[in-house]
Image: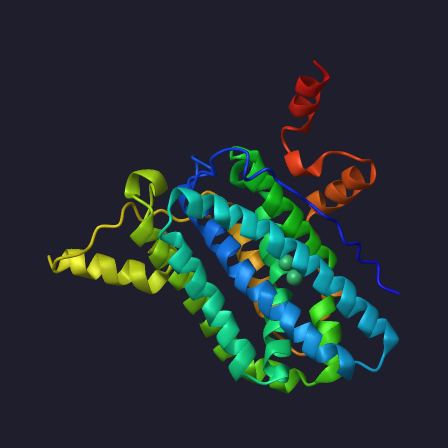
Length: 311
Ligand SMILES: [Fe+2]
Ligand SMILES: [Fe+2]
């Protein structure tokens, strides 16, 4: 029986402006998280279609139950990220075009690639989430806490549920495809696609969000782009200046970044079992608070909100 819980969450994105620069202390992380929001909408839409296609083929009732809970969690994430993205689009209407392009990339996979490829895509990408999100959640005091609490709470909820369902996509892949070799063989093309989609989102941010609102070059997370920009400046060639080349994780401890990187590599190897991962401490705190009825949609400000409502 699956342990996954489907939780409905709303973050009041329609109530007031959603800033692009939602964590002013870290413009590069603000931009990166916004790109994750856009990617999540397309990726989770693909997952919903994929599970619909896969479900009749799943013979084991326990796996079918896992797949059902997994897809319902992903559906909730997608809904919340759409509300976040809609808030950004209200302010910067050009971003609608960017979101459409991102979703289009995943729709393309749904239409043009076999089910096994999409199962491998989901298993491979989801396997990287626990080490990467642990790095972020372990550093929540700088990455999330100083920011807009709706955006911070959305990501914290999404990331802890990704940790919660860290094994689901692999369980489904193993029951239907069951080949580590296939998964590993597809990995380069899968991660090329992931990077292509993130790049699309970042290009859209540079194009549609004025520099004074984003405070950094959204493409600066790409090593190749940074190198190219530096080379062009050095050669005194005309270079489009999209803003400071800040990096989201520059202030995080190097050791923790290395552990995350090793975790990402390990997550792609044969016989990887996400059950054995070291989990972020914040995930346990989140589940405990949720069970106790804490307002997790205002992760850092729930007490202030409750006090205001009591007045
Ligand atoms: Fe998700
Ligand atoms: Fe997921």
